[in-house]
Length: 114
Image (tube, rainbow, N blue to C red; front, side, top):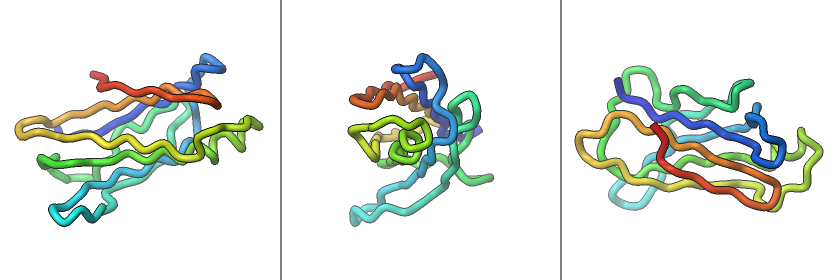
């Protein structure tokens, strides 16, 4: 199965970040970004699949964009980063990527999950 998923945790609250809009894009050889999928994190802060149904995970550069201003506004928090973009490379032969985001009003971090 080909999959790109994410999980957003609000480290300030110690809880999943529900309702965060997330967009997945792929960069072509000219540097142009092409939208592939979008979703909002569920109650557990997860987007289980951002690739369109039947899509093959191709080698290349991808970007996840998290609209964190929407989440912070709903949480009545004053966030420093209104948008978080995570750009990553997929190499040949890879079929599943999980990219978590650990988020707080004044910072964030990410890593390759499993």
